[in-house]
Every structure is written in structure tokens, then in C-alpha cells.
Length: 146
Length: 146
DNA sequence: CGCCGATTTAGATTTAATCTAAATCTATAT
DNA sequence: ATATAGATTTAGATTAAATCTAAATCGGCG
Ligand SMILES: [Mn+2]
Ligand SMILES: [Mn+2]
Ligand SMILES: [Zn+2]
Ligand SMILES: [Zn+2]
Image 1: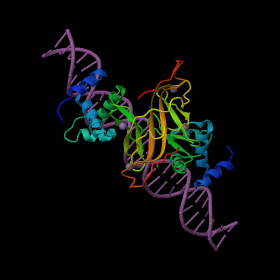
Image 2: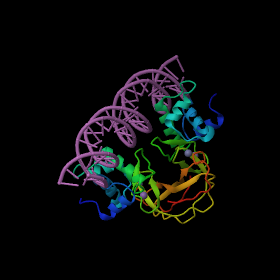
Image 3: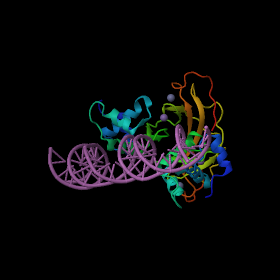
Image 4: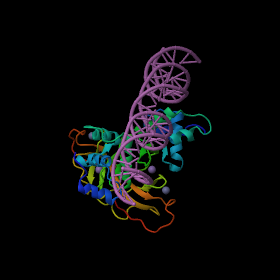
């Protein structure tokens, strides 16, 4: 597991978040294979080898990292929030069977089609729902509705 | 509060949901001014005058109605799920200040732009985030990112 | 080293959602 | 109209997620 990489340390400092081993461990877990993990999953992963962060600290770290924009909360099926080590913008697909959240390559919306009135939009995301490849068996096509 | 309207009774039966006064009360609350209410809010609203449905029944009703497609769970900021009396398809705007969820007129996505692979997509929704008119003061334009 | 504010921590607390088992209701068959 | 079976409702207990608390610990700085 080593110590905090220079790269990440930079990111932490740039975002004005003190680089602690706990925060690093949380971010590191989210970064590896781009999981969309719950706080509980992160807590377990981070302490698999030896105690590294309490539950409260995992929640605190997620909050700091989210405020700093290094992590974002993603839409999810169940009740527990899921987190994503932000980096490049992308959309999401949520499997209605297994709850898995998958990344969908970024694309813009058809300009002007949205009636957003006087609202100030700071970000948007498309959330697709359906059955993921793993759960879907085989079946041919992909349609869309509602 | 009267009894269940013929219209709604029809909708219930068509969806194969037994039309009970509790379910009606829940649906009715969601229908009035198109709120995006939490289970707790519905519970309180429904029992404001006199006891009408227990907390468990509100949750049960929301589940039945959701299964039947008469109601859908919407993306929300806080931890408590919010519900919407479905009807026409539409997108959502979530205010980062006050948490309000507002409806955005439906529009399709640019066909083919999405790389969805072997996933079977059954629905999608665009979620905009930002500052709602009420919270935003005045300010001119509307941009977008993430 | 010694201080101070930021961070971490275990455990308590709060909040949302689900579960349980008994009571009540509803549709249907007599 | 009455009986019966299954669905629904209910209060309260239980579980799960998130937050809070107050005491320890850490880390940068003089
Ligand atoms: Mn993602
Ligand atoms: Mn809506
Ligand atoms: Zn799946
Ligand atoms: Zn607002």
C-alpha cells in the first residue's frame, strides 16, 4: 500500500484537503478498478489488512473529498450512497437486477432542447436503468423509453 | 376527503393494485401540486386531519404503487427517497441549495451517441443539478458542465 | 520541544427503511 | 347475507445508513 503518491498529494493540496493516510486510503480504494463503492464497502476494503480508518472517518473522508471535487456521490439503486472517484465526466448505467453501477462514456445533450428557465445549471448527468450484460443473459437489442 | 375517484379506481384496477383508501391517500398527496415527497412527508400529510395510514403502510403503498408504475422513485439529494406520481415522462432538476426537485420537460437523447454495449436499457433520465430560481437570486445565464 | 487547530476514533444517537405477527379488510363463493 | 381465504394494515421492534459527540491523536510551526 505504501505512502501517498506525489500525484495524489498534489491533488489533495490543490484542493485544499490535508492529505492524511485515511483519506488517501479511501480515495485509493475508489480509484482502483473504478468501483462505485458504498461507505461500508470502503470501510471493509480499507481495513482488510490492518486497521486504517474508523467508520466515522470513512464518512468524514468521503465528505471532504466530495467537497473538494475529488470524489462524487453517484445515483444508485439501494439505500446506501455510492461514491465515484470523479476524474473525467461520464454518465451512469444502473442495473435494476444486481444494483451495479457502470460508467457510460460522456456525451453532450442536444443544445437548446432543455427548458431550464431561470435555473443555474452547474452539472448534469444521464442515468440509464436496465439490465446489465452480466445479469441480462444474452438477448439482442437495446431500446429505450421513459 | 371523499372517496376514491372513478378515474383513479380505474388506474388502480388496470394496474392490478387493490384500491384501498390508504393507497389512494398516498397517491392523492403525490398528485396534488406534483410534489416530490419523502415517505415521511407523505405520512404526515396523509394523517394531518385524522389517522389514515401507518408509517409501514405508507412504505408498503409506495412499493405497490411503484411496482404498478403509478409512482416512481426520483433521484434526490438527501438520504430519504423521494416519490413522484409518474404520469408523463420527464427529467429532473435538483437544487443543491434547498434540495427541491423540479420537473424538466421531456426530451430525447441524440440517437446513437451512447455506447451502451450489451446492456438492455429500459429507461433513462437526465438529472440536472444547480441552483433553483428561488434560491438563485437573479443572475443571468445557464451553463453546464461535469 | 510545546502548542493549537485539524483530524481521527469508538461508541452513542438519529434517521430511514424493513420486518413481524396479530388484527382487519375485501373479494368471492356459497 | 354469511363464510372463508387471502390481501392489506398496523404498532412496534429491528436493521441499516448516516451523523454526532467528546476525548485522543496528529502535524505543522514557533
Ligand atoms: Mn462512475
Ligand atoms: Mn417529477
Ligand atoms: Zn446486473
Ligand atoms: Zn433551491
